Length: 135
Image (cartoon, rainbow, N blue to C red; front, side, top):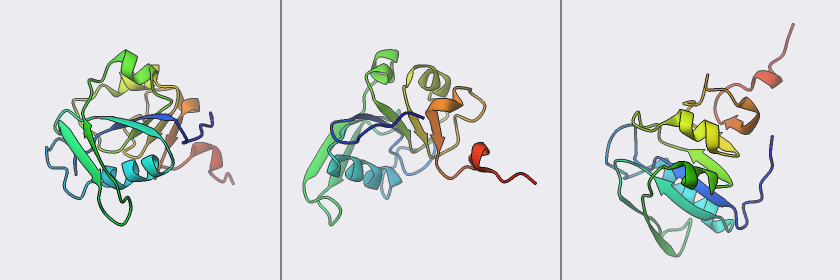
């Protein structure tokens, strides 16, 4: 697995809506994820087909406010990222395209399962097949 420092890393966050296939970003887990990434010095962009604009900060987790505009999910945008973080799994997103072109993926929704390239995917919350205990 590749290792990337978050300081100055180019991070593409996929999905900032609260849940799959909705346009409501209130209480979205992506807010805290993006705040943490910014606090570590990452350069963050996001794509969400349902949420065209997204704001984070102005709270105890991040004092400053940052506003973002959703970008198009293109091969170039994916390749320009050091890591892609999948937060909200929208059904209209082409995850095969993401898996084929991203150098490193953090998948918190398990949408990359079965798409190959497991050497560059870390699934958060899913069992790691290499760490399973064998009898």
